[in-house]
Image (cartoon, rainbow, N blue to C red; front, side, top):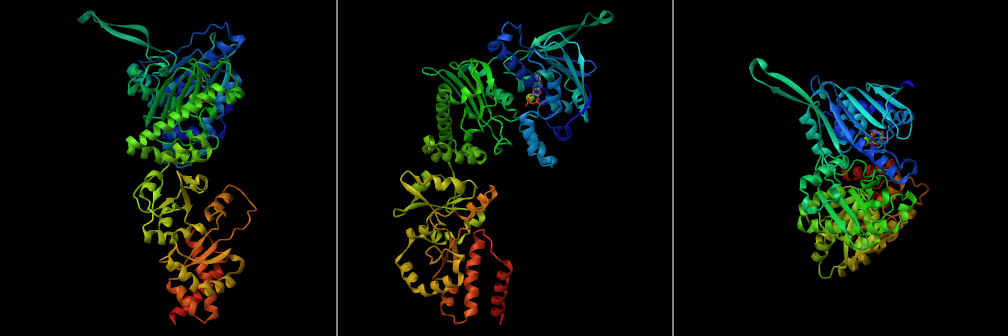
Length: 625
Ligand code: ADP
Ligand code: MG
């Protein structure tokens, strides 16, 4: 017992919260109520499945008290599971919770950016220090004898001591600071709870003093009477009929479970009856959560069984590519005491999951069709996870193919495979695409020249993930997807003239091949170039340069060196002149430069920059003669 120091990470977080969250200080109440509700959920669960707790007298409720006269405090009491001394230490002295932990991992140190980040999710218990100078937590764990008090001013130190309390549960008392005083007010508290916590499944009671004036003139006097009132509707909202619920009901519930301050982009509510009986309520947020691409993201879907909370930490309730979905699955058929291992192979749950995924993808397809602007908003935030679905979820690949969007060399904004197919020329053999890092570089790549000239559309794929996903798609309906930086692709667009040119530069090709030796896999005449003298492509099954970068970035070492194919443009002035020159030294410099510039344009590196510069300088000097 006695004084302890916060872990350094907690200090950093406290500092950030106190200095950057002032735009939404009221969320402290949402966070405390959410913790109280979790504590009630956990005890309720034990009373249902654990023999030690079956006879336990349990009246689940949350009570809020405040000092309306001096505005000195607000307190939140729950009759939930409670914490013992060790847990107070562990849960409140360190950043144990996964949400907070993730936040700490992702903060940048840039305060402005971080405050946006904080707004995206709950920062939990520590938000108390936005509105309080000091915080007291008194708690007694259900089933244990001793009660403990945790006290801190949020500035580095906290204290834990034993104390007296009969009932199990927790009271958090905030000794309000200047910012906090405004909240010690009945109307304020009611409003905040209605906004964020109305559909918490347990009753929330507000204790207040009813002030009245009685009598007239001399005899007029003030009376104060203590009152208690339940202020939330405390129903499992998802169990109610759709027809009974308003948009605001749904949105308020979303804000409660997601810790988002904004309304959701889309809401899906389903009551399934028949073979499997269950309810799902899913939301798509407007903005991607900060941890969307963290390996250890926080799942957004909670599992209930007959309205009893089971878990909010099960990543397999939906496939990982749908990890941005927030909401609830409530099954009537699962047993309450289902274990984690059993969850993962449970037939009932996997049945629910299968239909839920179909439902979500179906809704997205409808959204894309009926409200394309809304879909675009969605896609900008969650397009990458949808693409992940293409290699994670074969059974829904057809639907997912309708949902992915790409940029295009001929269309503005995003386009889709369906409309690409409709725009294809009658003799066009494939859907063409180019992958790489920067949209601008891709659009001006020499590889597109012939396509642009012939008016053939090429999809521009600048998401890192495209590199992995798109080759795996293979076909859309019956049309092949082909990368323009693949050696064979240009066969599709070869003309008679190309064949003639190819023949003519055979000797030059041989010369360049001898000069470059084993730096390239091959040298060929190109049919895809018009303005550029050369380009590089990769052989059919070799990884592209970007893919090689990606493998390296993912930590793969000892990758074999994979050589590109150099293509040269028979119609280009440089190439024509090179064919006729007798200057051996210059021919060698130019051949190498043709290769090196093509590498650079595709985002590759030249092996030896100083030799490259030497060659370039010799050519420049000759040009200036
Ligand atoms: P989170 O709720 O995301 O876990 P918080 O910072 O809100 O993060 O809370 C940290 C932890 O403190 C909780 O996970 C829980 O273990 C504990 N805790 C907080 N409030 C209560 C409470 N009222 N009753 C029991 N435990 C609590
Ligand atoms: Mg919390």
